[in-house]
Image 1 (spheres, rainbow, N blue to C red):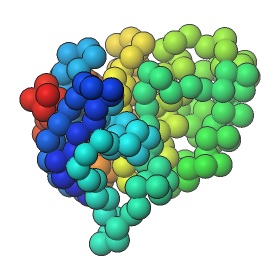
Image 2 (cartoon, helix red, strand yellow):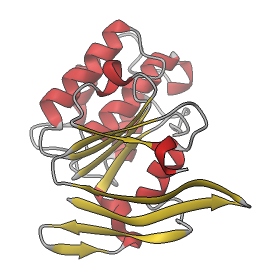
Image 3 (tube, rainbow, N blue to C red):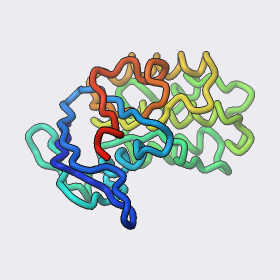
Length: 206
């Protein structure tokens, strides 16, 4: 899927978060959005995802030669973000079954296979409420990366992950995201977005 930004900008009250941003995300391309905390990285990602409306400019989505309306783009993307919530009363199996009732699972995987991949032997029957922050982040990652969607949006994807968790994340990217259009918001570029080929520095569009 390609995404074309045509001079987009976003303003809250009287302050422009970013402005005059033109960029084309190619099918299978990997792009990192960088900037200091509070600079507008997450806002830009939310605008591209269609969760927040832009103030000016336009965004075009195209998949296999077909234009996708912005009201339908959510069906084509998977997201990992610190502000994303899990249903903590659910067990792992219940959470996965709920998520994959909305997003198709990638070929070759089943719910039991994902549970085995996570290796939460002691915790797989416990409510997610009892999981550590790192375990919750791994659940978010498998939900997004093992969904069969052409777009993958990752907002600070290594949040709460230790070294083993970061390795787990990078292995998922390497194995299951090869042909997807990926956008990453990152403060730690080499650690969580070293696989990206292009960069948008949000502070250049103030």
